[in-house]
Length: 435
Image (cartoon, rainbow, N blue to C red; front, side, top):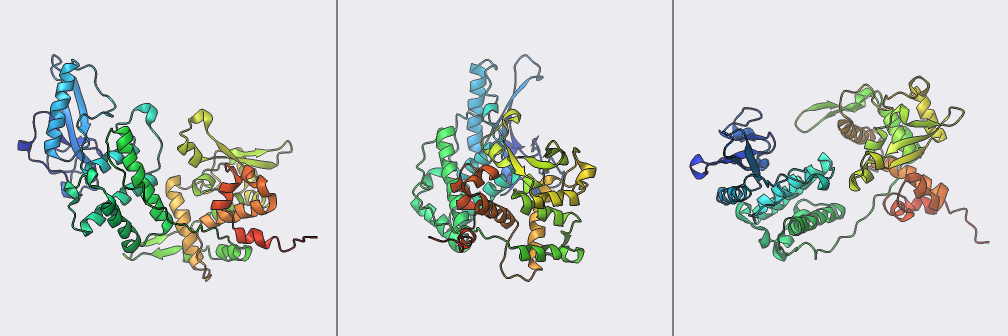
C-alpha cells in the first residue's frame, strides 16, 4: 500500500495525517519512526487521519483528539467537521475516549479492512472488550486481506475505490478461484480464510452498525483431510541422530545462511514427544512448575493452557492449567536435564540461557525439526506437530475415553477428530477375539 501523502491545501484546520504504528503525525515526506523517506515505511497500511482540537480557554494546553480509520481526505474532512460539532455540543466534556463510535462510516474496502485489523490489535477498543490475540494471528489476517486485494486487481478491479457493498457472489467467486487455483491452498486453509471474511463482515454489521449482505455466509465448507500421522520409535531415533551441528545449517534462496542447531534441540524434541504439548507450552515449562510427591519424586507438571486462556479471555485468577503426568520417559528426560541441580528454580527446561524470546524459539524449533527431518532420508514428510499427535494417539490407545481427561481436551470427540491416528488404534485391535 502506498504512503498516505496529502497536500496541506486539501486539509482543514486541526486535521493531520497520522501513523498508528509510530504514533506520530506525518507532517513531511519522512517516516517519523526511522527518519527516512516515507516511501521506505513498512507500515503504510496504518496511515490514516487524526483530528486535534484545542479546548477553548486553556491556551492550547488541553486538546481533544480522534483517529479516523479512513485514507480518503474528503471523508476525513467530513468526519473532522462532525467531531468539532460533537465537541462543541458537549462543551468539550463528553468525549468518546475509546473511539468506538464513528458518525461517518467508511464504505471503502481498504478502510474497513484497516479498521478490523486495528480492532484485532485492540486499538480504539473499550477496555472490557479487549481480547488477547497473537501476532501470528493478526499477520495472518493482514495476509488474507492482501490476497483478497490481489484477487481483485488480477480481475481488473480498482481496489482503492472498491466498496464493501460491492462484495457479492461474483466477487466471492473470484476470490474462491484465486485461493484454489492461483494460491493452490488446501481445503483447511481455504475454510479458515472464508470463515475470517464471514466474521469480518459480521463484525462490521454487529459492532459498527453497517447493514451489509454477507456473501460469504453461503460458501460451502470444503472437506478437510486430517493429518493425524504419527512418528514411530525408529523414525524418532533416526531424527535425533541427525541433530548435529553440520546438519543445522540452512541456506535460503537469497543465499542467507542460518544455523538452526542448538545444544538443547534434542531435549526439545524429546520434551514435545513425552508431553504432547504445543510449542509455546513445552517451551514455557520451568523447573518450578514440576510437582512432586511426599518422596520428592516428580509426578505432575503444571502447564498453562495458552490457547484456551486466550480464546476465553481468562484473567490471572481464572487461568486454565494442564496437569501433565511425569511418565517413565519424561522422568528420564528430566534427569538428563539435570533436574536435581535445577529443581524449584525458575529456569526454563529448554533454552534457559537463550537471549531470544520464547516467541522466536517457537519458530526455531519448528524449522529445526523440518530441517533435521529432511536429513533422515525418510520419504514421509512430518513436522513438529506430529510429535504431539503421536503422544495423544498413544494416550487414547492406552486409556480410551479417559485420555481426554489426561490431555485436557473438552471431549474425546475433539481428541479423536484432530489428533488421534485411527489406523494405529485399529492395528492395536489385531489381538481382539470375538469369543
